[in-house]
Amino acid sequence: MTLAEKLRQLIIEAQGRAADAASLEDVEALRVKYLGRKGALAELTGLLGQIDAAEKPEAGREANRAKNEITAALEARSVAVKASGGTVGSAAKEDLSLPGTAPLVGGLHPITQVIDEICDIFYRLGFQIASGPEMETDYYNFEALNIPADHSSRDDLATFYIENGKLLRSQTSTVQTRIMEKERPPVKVLAPGRVYRPDATDATHSFMFHQIEGLCVDERVTFADLKGVLLAFAKQFFGADVKMRFRPHFFPFTEPSAEVDISCGLCKGSGCRSCAQKGWLEILGAGMVHPNVLRACKVSPEKYSGFAFGFGVERIAMLKWGVNDIRLFYENDMRFLRQFSA
Ligand code: DAH
Image (cartoon, rainbow, N blue to C red; front, side, top):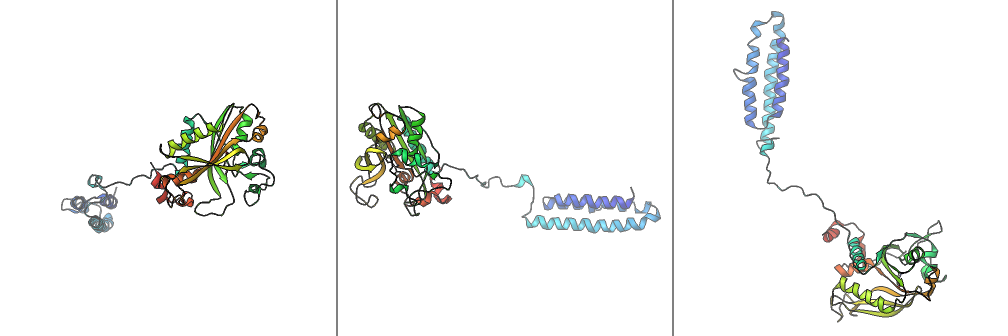
Protein backbone atom coordinates (compact mmCIF):
# COMPACT_ATOMS: atom_id res chain seq x y z
CA MET A 1 0.00 0.00 0.00
CA THR A 2 1.36 3.39 -0.95
CA LEU A 3 1.62 6.22 1.56
CA ALA A 4 -1.13 8.12 -0.27
CA GLU A 5 -3.41 5.09 0.11
CA LYS A 6 -2.58 4.80 3.80
CA LEU A 7 -3.51 8.46 4.25
CA ARG A 8 -6.81 7.98 2.44
CA GLN A 9 -7.57 5.05 4.72
CA LEU A 10 -6.72 7.13 7.76
CA ILE A 11 -9.25 9.77 6.69
CA ILE A 12 -12.02 7.19 6.39
CA GLU A 13 -11.16 5.61 9.75
CA ALA A 14 -10.98 8.96 11.55
CA GLN A 15 -14.28 10.13 10.05
CA GLY A 16 -15.96 6.92 11.24
CA ARG A 17 -14.61 7.23 14.78
CA ALA A 18 -15.52 10.93 14.93
CA ALA A 19 -19.14 10.12 14.03
CA ASP A 20 -19.29 7.68 16.96
CA ALA A 21 -17.84 10.08 19.54
CA ALA A 22 -20.38 10.48 22.36
CA SER A 23 -18.88 13.35 24.32
CA LEU A 24 -16.48 16.27 24.03
CA GLU A 25 -13.88 14.19 25.85
CA ASP A 26 -14.20 11.51 23.20
CA VAL A 27 -13.71 14.11 20.47
CA GLU A 28 -10.61 15.46 22.17
CA ALA A 29 -9.15 11.99 22.58
CA LEU A 30 -9.62 11.43 18.85
CA ARG A 31 -7.98 14.73 18.06
CA VAL A 32 -4.90 13.65 20.03
CA LYS A 33 -4.97 10.19 18.47
CA TYR A 34 -5.15 11.43 14.86
CA LEU A 35 -3.84 14.99 14.79
CA GLY A 36 -1.62 15.17 17.88
CA ARG A 37 2.11 15.69 17.71
CA LYS A 38 2.64 11.95 18.08
CA GLY A 39 -0.62 11.05 16.43
CA ALA A 40 -1.37 8.85 13.43
CA LEU A 41 -1.19 11.64 10.86
CA ALA A 42 2.14 12.90 12.19
CA GLU A 43 3.45 9.37 12.01
CA LEU A 44 2.49 9.00 8.35
CA THR A 45 3.71 12.44 7.27
CA GLY A 46 7.00 11.54 8.96
CA LEU A 47 7.40 8.90 6.23
CA LEU A 48 7.22 11.47 3.41
CA GLY A 49 10.99 11.79 3.37
CA GLN A 50 11.46 8.09 2.84
CA ILE A 51 9.31 7.44 -0.22
CA ASP A 52 10.08 7.62 -3.96
CA ALA A 53 10.17 11.13 -5.37
CA ALA A 54 7.50 10.11 -7.87
CA GLU A 55 5.02 9.32 -5.11
CA LYS A 56 5.69 12.41 -3.08
CA PRO A 57 3.36 14.95 -4.74
CA GLU A 58 0.30 12.70 -4.35
CA ALA A 59 1.21 11.69 -0.80
CA GLY A 60 1.78 15.32 0.10
CA ARG A 61 -1.64 16.30 -1.22
CA GLU A 62 -3.30 13.44 0.73
CA ALA A 63 -1.49 14.49 3.91
CA ASN A 64 -2.92 17.98 3.60
CA ARG A 65 -6.36 16.65 2.80
CA ALA A 66 -6.17 14.30 5.81
CA LYS A 67 -5.41 17.17 8.15
CA ASN A 68 -8.30 19.24 6.79
CA GLU A 69 -10.86 16.46 6.61
CA ILE A 70 -10.12 14.98 10.02
CA THR A 71 -10.15 18.43 11.61
CA ALA A 72 -13.51 19.15 9.94
CA ALA A 73 -14.99 15.82 11.05
CA LEU A 74 -13.96 16.36 14.67
CA GLU A 75 -15.21 19.94 14.57
CA ALA A 76 -18.59 18.89 13.23
CA ARG A 77 -18.88 16.22 15.87
CA SER A 78 -18.08 18.54 18.73
CA VAL A 79 -20.78 20.96 17.51
CA ALA A 80 -23.30 18.09 17.41
CA VAL A 81 -22.31 16.86 20.87
CA LYS A 82 -22.65 20.35 22.34
CA ALA A 83 -26.06 20.83 20.70
CA SER A 84 -27.36 17.67 22.33
CA GLY A 85 -26.33 18.75 25.82
CA GLY A 86 -22.87 17.31 26.04
CA THR A 87 -23.50 13.67 25.23
CA VAL A 88 -25.19 11.76 22.44
CA GLY A 89 -25.94 8.12 21.86
CA SER A 90 -24.29 6.88 25.01
CA ALA A 91 -26.52 4.29 26.67
CA ALA A 92 -24.83 4.66 30.03
CA LYS A 93 -25.82 8.31 30.25
CA GLU A 94 -29.55 7.95 29.52
CA ASP A 95 -31.92 8.95 32.33
CA LEU A 96 -33.58 5.67 33.23
CA SER A 97 -35.84 7.38 35.76
CA LEU A 98 -37.85 9.15 33.04
CA PRO A 99 -41.45 7.86 32.83
CA GLY A 100 -41.96 5.49 29.88
CA THR A 101 -44.74 5.35 27.30
CA ALA A 102 -47.48 3.13 28.71
CA PRO A 103 -49.02 0.74 26.17
CA LEU A 104 -52.75 1.30 25.54
CA VAL A 105 -54.66 -1.46 27.34
CA GLY A 106 -57.94 -2.50 25.76
CA GLY A 107 -61.15 -3.30 27.58
CA LEU A 108 -64.60 -4.74 26.93
CA HIS A 109 -67.19 -2.38 25.47
CA PRO A 110 -69.78 -1.34 28.10
CA ILE A 111 -72.56 -3.09 26.14
CA THR A 112 -70.54 -6.30 26.10
CA GLN A 113 -69.94 -5.93 29.83
CA VAL A 114 -73.68 -5.62 30.52
CA ILE A 115 -74.48 -8.60 28.28
CA ASP A 116 -71.84 -10.67 30.07
CA GLU A 117 -73.12 -9.66 33.49
CA ILE A 118 -76.74 -10.46 32.63
CA CYS A 119 -75.82 -13.79 30.98
CA ASP A 120 -73.83 -14.66 34.07
CA ILE A 121 -76.82 -14.09 36.38
CA PHE A 122 -79.20 -16.14 34.21
CA TYR A 123 -76.59 -18.84 33.74
CA ARG A 124 -76.56 -19.27 37.50
CA LEU A 125 -80.38 -19.51 37.37
CA GLY A 126 -79.99 -22.48 35.02
CA PHE A 127 -80.31 -20.80 31.60
CA GLN A 128 -78.13 -21.80 28.66
CA ILE A 129 -76.81 -19.09 26.36
CA ALA A 130 -77.96 -19.30 22.74
CA SER A 131 -77.82 -17.19 19.61
CA GLY A 132 -79.50 -16.89 16.23
CA PRO A 133 -78.87 -15.23 12.87
CA GLU A 134 -79.21 -11.46 12.41
CA MET A 135 -80.45 -11.94 8.83
CA GLU A 136 -83.77 -13.68 9.29
CA THR A 137 -86.83 -14.87 7.43
CA ASP A 138 -90.28 -13.40 7.79
CA TYR A 139 -91.27 -16.73 9.33
CA TYR A 140 -88.98 -16.55 12.37
CA ASN A 141 -89.26 -12.81 12.92
CA PHE A 142 -93.06 -12.66 12.64
CA GLU A 143 -95.11 -15.64 11.59
CA ALA A 144 -93.92 -18.25 14.04
CA LEU A 145 -94.31 -15.61 16.76
CA ASN A 146 -98.03 -15.29 16.05
CA ILE A 147 -97.61 -11.80 14.60
CA PRO A 148 -100.49 -11.26 12.13
CA ALA A 149 -99.86 -10.26 8.50
CA ASP A 150 -101.24 -6.76 9.03
CA HIS A 151 -99.28 -6.00 12.22
CA SER A 152 -97.57 -2.60 12.14
CA SER A 153 -94.14 -4.08 13.01
CA ARG A 154 -94.17 -5.82 9.60
CA ASP A 155 -94.32 -2.48 7.83
CA ASP A 156 -91.40 -1.28 5.66
CA LEU A 157 -91.06 1.58 8.11
CA ALA A 158 -90.62 -0.76 11.08
CA THR A 159 -88.38 -3.50 9.69
CA PHE A 160 -85.38 -3.53 7.34
CA TYR A 161 -86.16 -5.78 4.37
CA ILE A 162 -83.34 -7.14 2.25
CA GLU A 163 -83.58 -7.64 -1.50
CA ASN A 164 -82.99 -11.37 -1.13
CA GLY A 165 -86.41 -11.69 0.51
CA LYS A 166 -84.99 -11.83 4.01
CA LEU A 167 -84.92 -9.14 6.69
CA LEU A 168 -82.75 -7.90 9.53
CA ARG A 169 -84.34 -9.29 12.66
CA SER A 170 -86.15 -6.63 14.66
CA GLN A 171 -86.20 -8.67 17.87
CA THR A 172 -84.30 -11.53 19.49
CA SER A 173 -87.63 -13.33 20.05
CA THR A 174 -86.73 -15.10 16.78
CA VAL A 175 -84.49 -17.36 18.82
CA GLN A 176 -87.52 -18.81 20.66
CA THR A 177 -88.63 -20.75 17.60
CA ARG A 178 -85.14 -21.56 16.38
CA ILE A 179 -84.31 -23.16 19.73
CA MET A 180 -87.59 -25.03 20.21
CA GLU A 181 -87.36 -26.53 16.74
CA LYS A 182 -84.02 -28.04 17.65
CA GLU A 183 -84.42 -28.86 21.31
CA ARG A 184 -87.49 -30.36 22.88
CA PRO A 185 -88.66 -29.08 26.29
CA PRO A 186 -87.45 -28.60 28.94
CA VAL A 187 -85.85 -25.54 27.36
CA LYS A 188 -84.27 -22.75 29.35
CA VAL A 189 -82.25 -20.34 27.23
CA LEU A 190 -81.05 -16.78 27.13
CA ALA A 191 -80.27 -15.24 23.73
CA PRO A 192 -78.38 -11.95 23.51
CA GLY A 193 -77.77 -10.27 20.17
CA ARG A 194 -78.14 -7.37 17.78
CA VAL A 195 -81.47 -6.25 16.36
CA TYR A 196 -82.28 -3.65 13.71
CA ARG A 197 -85.11 -1.16 13.21
CA PRO A 198 -85.36 1.75 10.80
CA ASP A 199 -85.85 4.27 13.60
CA ALA A 200 -84.58 7.83 13.34
CA THR A 201 -81.53 8.16 15.57
CA ASP A 202 -81.89 10.25 18.70
CA ALA A 203 -80.86 10.10 22.36
CA THR A 204 -82.89 6.93 22.97
CA HIS A 205 -83.16 5.34 19.50
CA SER A 206 -80.69 3.69 17.18
CA PHE A 207 -81.17 1.70 13.96
CA MET A 208 -79.18 -1.09 15.63
CA PHE A 209 -79.24 -2.06 19.27
CA HIS A 210 -79.00 -5.14 21.48
CA GLN A 211 -81.65 -7.26 23.08
CA ILE A 212 -81.65 -10.26 25.34
CA GLU A 213 -84.42 -12.81 24.98
CA GLY A 214 -85.25 -15.34 27.68
CA LEU A 215 -87.31 -18.48 27.21
CA CYS A 216 -88.30 -21.21 29.63
CA VAL A 217 -90.61 -24.04 28.53
CA ASP A 218 -91.42 -27.11 30.57
CA GLU A 219 -94.34 -28.88 32.19
CA ARG A 220 -96.27 -26.75 34.71
CA VAL A 221 -94.33 -23.51 34.20
CA THR A 222 -96.43 -20.65 35.58
CA PHE A 223 -96.50 -16.87 35.71
CA ALA A 224 -95.21 -17.16 39.27
CA ASP A 225 -92.03 -18.75 37.90
CA LEU A 226 -91.63 -15.80 35.52
CA LYS A 227 -92.00 -13.34 38.38
CA GLY A 228 -89.58 -15.27 40.58
CA VAL A 229 -86.90 -15.48 37.90
CA LEU A 230 -87.15 -11.82 36.88
CA LEU A 231 -87.14 -10.58 40.49
CA ALA A 232 -84.09 -12.75 41.26
CA PHE A 233 -82.35 -11.23 38.26
CA ALA A 234 -83.30 -7.64 39.17
CA LYS A 235 -82.07 -8.04 42.75
CA GLN A 236 -78.74 -9.40 41.53
CA PHE A 237 -78.30 -6.74 38.89
CA PHE A 238 -79.78 -3.60 40.41
CA GLY A 239 -79.44 -4.34 44.14
CA ALA A 240 -81.34 -6.28 46.81
CA ASP A 241 -83.75 -3.43 47.62
CA VAL A 242 -85.12 -3.07 44.08
CA LYS A 243 -88.88 -3.45 43.64
CA MET A 244 -90.60 -4.81 40.56
CA ARG A 245 -94.08 -4.45 39.12
CA PHE A 246 -95.93 -6.05 36.23
CA ARG A 247 -98.35 -3.98 34.13
CA PRO A 248 -100.77 -5.77 31.78
CA HIS A 249 -99.75 -5.31 28.15
CA PHE A 250 -100.14 -6.95 24.76
CA PHE A 251 -97.59 -8.93 22.79
CA PRO A 252 -98.75 -11.31 20.03
CA PHE A 253 -96.39 -14.08 21.15
CA THR A 254 -97.32 -14.16 24.85
CA GLU A 255 -100.64 -14.46 26.65
CA PRO A 256 -101.00 -13.01 29.21
CA SER A 257 -98.34 -10.37 28.60
CA ALA A 258 -96.87 -7.67 30.79
CA GLU A 259 -94.50 -4.78 30.76
CA VAL A 260 -92.17 -4.94 33.71
CA ASP A 261 -90.90 -1.96 35.69
CA ILE A 262 -88.31 -1.64 38.41
CA SER A 263 -88.32 1.01 41.12
CA CYS A 264 -86.18 4.02 40.21
CA GLY A 265 -82.75 3.60 41.76
CA LEU A 266 -82.23 7.34 42.14
CA CYS A 267 -85.38 8.38 44.04
CA LYS A 268 -86.25 4.90 45.37
CA GLY A 269 -89.78 5.25 44.04
CA SER A 270 -90.73 8.72 45.21
CA GLY A 271 -90.42 10.30 41.75
CA CYS A 272 -87.61 12.27 40.15
CA ARG A 273 -86.49 13.58 36.76
CA SER A 274 -84.80 10.35 35.82
CA CYS A 275 -88.08 8.39 36.07
CA ALA A 276 -90.31 11.26 34.82
CA GLN A 277 -91.75 11.55 38.37
CA LYS A 278 -93.19 8.04 38.10
CA GLY A 279 -90.92 6.28 40.58
CA TRP A 280 -90.77 3.35 38.12
CA LEU A 281 -88.67 2.55 35.05
CA GLU A 282 -89.79 0.14 32.35
CA ILE A 283 -87.11 -2.45 31.65
CA LEU A 284 -88.66 -5.33 29.74
CA GLY A 285 -91.59 -7.11 28.12
CA ALA A 286 -92.64 -10.58 29.22
CA GLY A 287 -95.43 -13.10 29.37
CA MET A 288 -96.55 -16.70 29.05
CA VAL A 289 -95.63 -18.20 25.67
CA HIS A 290 -98.70 -18.13 23.41
CA PRO A 291 -100.08 -21.59 22.53
CA ASN A 292 -99.77 -20.71 18.83
CA VAL A 293 -96.02 -20.21 19.25
CA LEU A 294 -95.71 -23.60 20.93
CA ARG A 295 -97.78 -25.19 18.17
CA ALA A 296 -95.58 -23.60 15.47
CA CYS A 297 -92.65 -25.39 17.11
CA LYS A 298 -94.61 -28.65 17.35
CA VAL A 299 -94.66 -28.44 21.14
CA SER A 300 -97.97 -29.43 22.70
CA PRO A 301 -99.62 -26.54 24.60
CA GLU A 302 -101.66 -29.14 26.47
CA LYS A 303 -98.57 -30.69 27.95
CA TYR A 304 -96.16 -27.75 28.10
CA SER A 305 -96.25 -24.12 29.14
CA GLY A 306 -93.57 -21.51 29.30
CA PHE A 307 -92.62 -17.93 29.87
CA ALA A 308 -90.60 -15.53 27.73
CA PHE A 309 -89.13 -12.11 28.26
CA GLY A 310 -87.05 -9.64 26.31
CA PHE A 311 -85.20 -6.49 27.14
CA GLY A 312 -83.01 -3.88 25.54
CA VAL A 313 -79.41 -3.99 26.65
CA GLU A 314 -78.63 -0.33 25.92
CA ARG A 315 -81.52 0.77 28.11
CA ILE A 316 -80.24 -1.35 31.00
CA ALA A 317 -76.69 -0.02 30.49
CA MET A 318 -77.98 3.56 30.46
CA LEU A 319 -79.82 2.97 33.74
CA LYS A 320 -76.85 1.24 35.32
CA TRP A 321 -74.38 4.01 34.55
CA GLY A 322 -76.60 7.05 34.18
CA VAL A 323 -75.75 7.45 30.47
CA ASN A 324 -78.22 9.88 28.90
CA ASP A 325 -77.59 9.35 25.19
CA ILE A 326 -77.57 5.96 23.42
CA ARG A 327 -75.35 7.34 20.64
CA LEU A 328 -72.41 7.51 23.04
CA PHE A 329 -72.17 3.71 22.88
CA TYR A 330 -71.55 3.69 19.13
CA GLU A 331 -69.30 6.67 18.47
CA ASN A 332 -66.04 5.02 19.49
CA ASP A 333 -65.02 8.08 21.48
CA MET A 334 -62.23 6.81 23.70
CA ARG A 335 -62.93 9.51 26.30
CA PHE A 336 -66.32 7.88 26.87
CA LEU A 337 -65.29 4.23 26.48
CA ARG A 338 -62.23 4.41 28.75
CA GLN A 339 -64.52 5.14 31.71
CA PHE A 340 -65.75 1.56 31.53
CA SER A 341 -62.42 -0.25 31.32
CA ALA A 342 -61.84 -2.33 34.40
N1 DAH B 1 -89.66 -8.82 21.39
C1 DAH B 1 -90.25 -7.74 22.18
C2 DAH B 1 -89.73 -6.39 21.62
O1 DAH B 1 -88.82 -6.38 20.85
C3 DAH B 1 -89.83 -7.86 23.62
C4 DAH B 1 -90.54 -8.99 24.29
C5 DAH B 1 -91.74 -8.79 24.87
C6 DAH B 1 -89.98 -10.26 24.31
C7 DAH B 1 -92.42 -9.81 25.51
C8 DAH B 1 -90.66 -11.30 24.92
C9 DAH B 1 -91.88 -11.05 25.52
O2 DAH B 1 -90.16 -12.53 24.99
O3 DAH B 1 -92.53 -12.07 26.15
O4 DAH B 1 -90.29 -5.40 21.95
